[in-house]
Image (cartoon, rainbow, N blue to C red; front, side, top):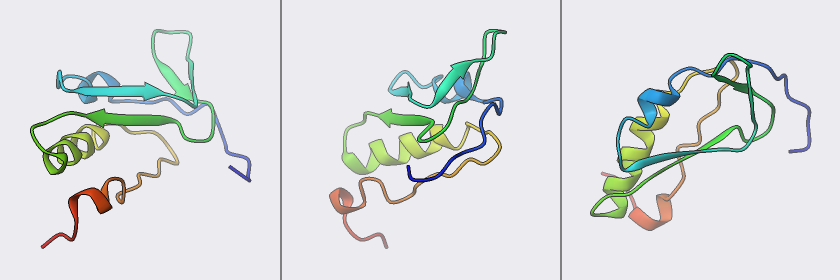
Length: 89
């Protein structure tokens, strides 16, 4: 990313997001908070991936899990896999 980010914001909801056995949360811009949790460390903080019977269902499952994760300054892209599933009604 071309700009600096504020860091150190606590991340909530990781366990809730991963409560679905078909969801995996990948850490990228995170660090341990020293208390068993995580805080933001800049850039793309997390990647949320899911599997399902179809791409559309996997996308829905991944976004549902991502919506459970919260931290200050969070930005969630909603266009991931859009080309794979086509136009939405």
